[in-house]
Image 1 (cartoon, one colour):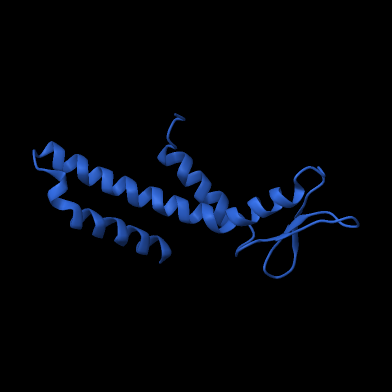
Image 2 (tube, rainbow, N blue to C red):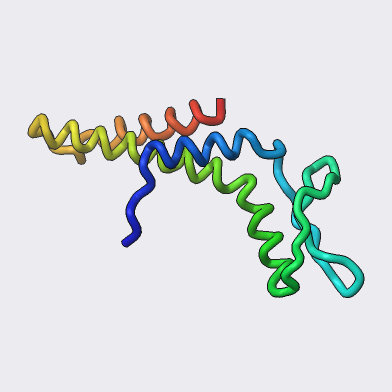
Length: 116
């Protein structure tokens, strides 16, 4: 199993995401006469693929990451908060399963907070 991301690594990914061209990116498939690429919502070409091997698939993945990665980071944060709550219950000698609703609320609140 790979090593989990550290808080520092997650914050660096967030920083990189906030510094990129904003908004959802769109994959622009290539064909015989043009290269695949990734565009911003304003139609500006952000990235052109030149490998000619799986360019359309690579462009689609990169474009999907513009939305998926921030959501994944928010989910990781919420799940870490739930795990921290479980550990607190465990340290206090309480049954963490008695607090399922509290943990669900913590996770939902964390995700709402990230969406701002």
